[in-house]
Length: 341
Ligand SMILES: [Zn+2]
Image (cartoon, rainbow, N blue to C red):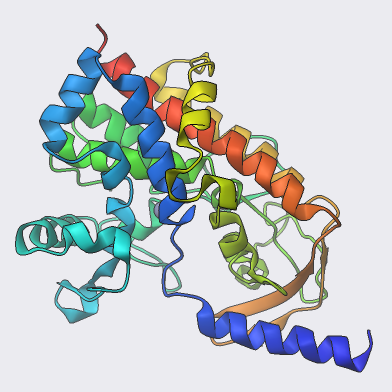
């Protein structure tokens, strides 16, 4: 590599570290809101739509799709105070005493019951992802990156609450409204390929399989957050949605496509596992023909540079749109299945 391009790489790496927010908002707010808007449209004028409306009051799934991310503004180390005021425009409508109290209550109840390991975050933040190695074709609990509080389990737990069953530990879901709020967000997350499939890399930047031999925690790429490309970090690049879909501009097109998505052909208890398998398949495409540098240690662990193949934007745009359509359809299908006509 020429010195000049190496310097650019280093500079962009430093900038991206500075820009990386404390918590990555999956799909960004735009993506989650579109997923919610699709589901709002699909359950309109159905019994499921009435039930959701009764639980959410004046708010739509589109608005509430960001709730589980806004909750991350509640800081356990500051006595569960809300510390993100004014930072995220999509959370502004929740920045009032009653809504903040509800978020703090959820964050408290879902903070430490899962007994996070020393390098893991608050339980409810772990509900948003799983980190399966790309060598696998299927989600299976027990594999490195999976656990009892990952996004697969969180979605199943919230569905159980809608069915009138108690939430299994370590989840503490107060009522059906809270379950709807979780689903409105997490069903979006589980369709984001980098929330499910992860590469594990050694110090030389070679892919390793964490499920073979002893798992080295230093090989974890944190769902692509530890992979730096000239455009930022890979996770953030995937969270961002294509311009034609921003701010709901493409929602009508997405809604029409979502109407053609068939129901997952399995019992509802297994849906989140099937959706994770689909996202894992997408993640393999997301990492096809990518190359990695040797690792650079930093305060948070290791980080690697990733080189992306030509026309990567096109590959991403197609996968993202398809995933958002499926997410919106699947969110609606949960409600119409639990509350049929
Ligand atoms: Zn999320």
